[in-house]
Image (cartoon, helix red, strand yellow):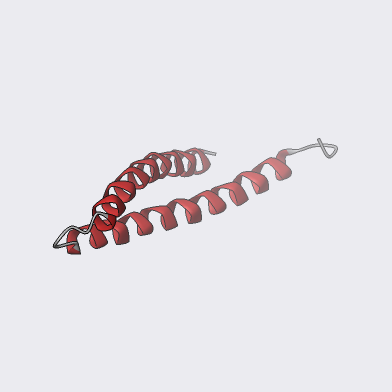
Length: 79
């Protein structure tokens, strides 16, 4: 059960990082849309943000699968 709790904590932390990634993505896309001269940094920010979001989605799906397995194995009588 502690493994499951740790997995949930990691997923929550990735969720917070994903919210920050969305904020930074918005800022980077705004700079790109305004036609800044050098947007290499902004594109790198978007790549890192995409990686964080991908990790969060993967961790969420994995965690939900583990939670469903844990709750279905402890359920008695189908409840």
